[in-house]
Length: 115
Image (cartoon, rainbow, N blue to C red; front, side, top):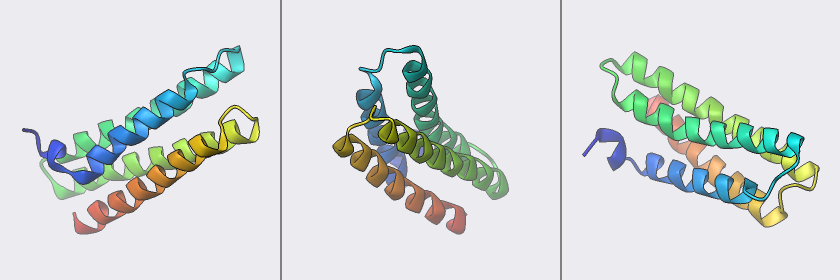
């Protein structure tokens, strides 16, 4: 088992990606597809960078990837706001994504502080 697979934070990132992917599957028009792709890639980046950080040899390197992961969480929230504002993301979906993003950001802050 890889180190990241043991982290609760990583497990929540998978839930975040699942929510984002489900919420954006129905978007079809060109601009909507662009936004859907952007938020899905950002959500995937959250889990991927967290995992990559756990594989680094130094604490400094690990923190760097945890910070990148946290930045991707912020990107997810920003694009979710745009999708919600444009009426492309339903309020319950937005709320779920926002709640999970906030949870992951807090967990990542803990990992960054802990080292």
